[in-house]
Length: 559
Image 1 (tube, rainbow, N blue to C red):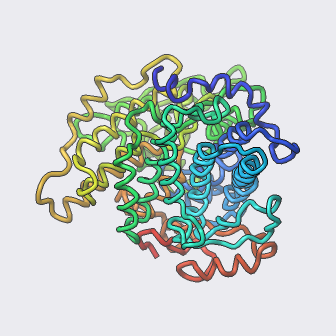
Image 2: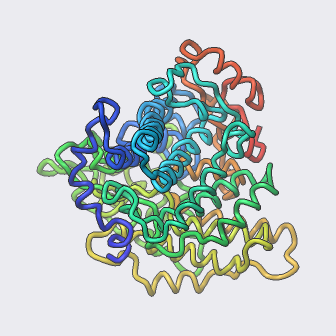
Image 3: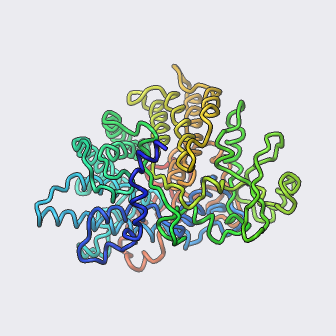
């Protein structure tokens, strides 16, 4: 496929040496910076552990991509499970943060000792720093940033927590994420066709211009994140990014490929897929697509079912035959109103079973299927071990430009054009999950887009503008499947899509009074190991307490 060749042409050779990347670069006395950079990207994609807990159980269930068939999936009920809550913190500060900060240190040392030019390498390092840290601060709030990961290199074992505003915009002493991206993009634009880190760069194979587009697109992501609280600063950064150039097609997607490999828990396997494939049995690992998600696929366009439905979702036989689960796939039946109905969020298992009986899944699919008749991710395409990890897509970039055109028309025009481009890109992006070329038929994509109402126009009322934004964020929410971190952040920023807001879960065991949590808690160990810094961070939170009941600095108020 053209997309794979462009954005992942070196991946076969790169992922084939995941054994090399799996050698902890913090232990050798001398480390190849290129290998350390590739290792850090792979560790950021993560494995089953953090994808299961932070991405799927919490973020994706809270944002209603998925619903759980067990009360153990805390995000579906807004309950607290500290092991799940802590996973992203533990894994990111344990690996990507430590590695990217040490890589920074190692490169600076090479520059000092050998006179090596490191500007382009540092541009890539800083872009990836931003990627790692923005997920952490968007999940937890104030976090260690300017002093993080420096225990080995500088002896800082009790790093301070920086405020969200400082992390995004800096404070005179600390360079913020947006400035880091801005400087990196300028450096890489000047680099022309330079090859930075070569094939050890497992995302873009050292292509400086693709990294520059990624940096500029990330400026749109982060700029819009803070646009409600720091509009002028956000617009200034975004204007420069748009002028320099953001992602222009699916050839520019920031992603890595995976391979099957011998280790089912290794980095060569897609971390989300590991969740659905390991120890799943007939349960499909207890996740089902939510009612919200399936309603959009089935009913968003009154003229046509979303053509992604049959490729993204599936209902399977729950029986066990010759050592294999899910041998029988039941296709969507458009004539049956309850075919491929999603599971409402927040139901207890007995309620889910009763609803399945009410919908007649045993008759529609197969006797005994019960609540497993609610669809799960399609196992032929979406949850293979080789499935890609997508960090940022061209589709997301187009949806960001569509929103900018609605809210800040002085920066971008043609909201409807960007909106339609985003939908087409999101559907064609599914080619990355296929081994045999184009997945969603192109004529079906075009028919779908052609039948949608036109967004934008002159003299739009506030209600019409909000409706346009809701449409944009609905399609963006679909495109962010498996990236629960970003979907969760975007909902907190906008409280869109509106149906997510209108269907927040009120469960007796929930601890947020029926509101989607505003953040995750700090791991309890932080109080003991870094207590003074932790206490200052808690004081920076909106309610002054380390709870779910906080709106982050940039978020639309929900508490």
